[in-house]
Image 1 (tube, rainbow, N blue to C red):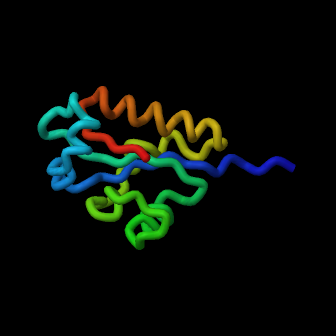
Image 2: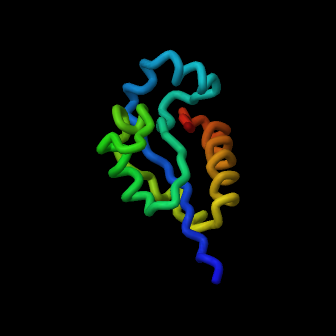
Length: 108
């Protein structure tokens, strides 16, 4: 029996202090002043559990560990859950969509 889709994309709001990092600024040349800074990821876990692991330093992205504030479900909930390949593709697409909207985006 096939498993039900259980992968998720998620978006974490990052502190505006992340803009002080040259690497983050270089990755976001189209950033529009006043828009949020976010990290976009995908996981086989519930996004709340994944965020807690990031903040605990478990398989954490440095930007989420140091600058992560909260999940932003309004930006990702409608897509979840989904199969693995769909989540991999949606992680990239969501990052592209948010950058086009002027967000500062980081993806692993």
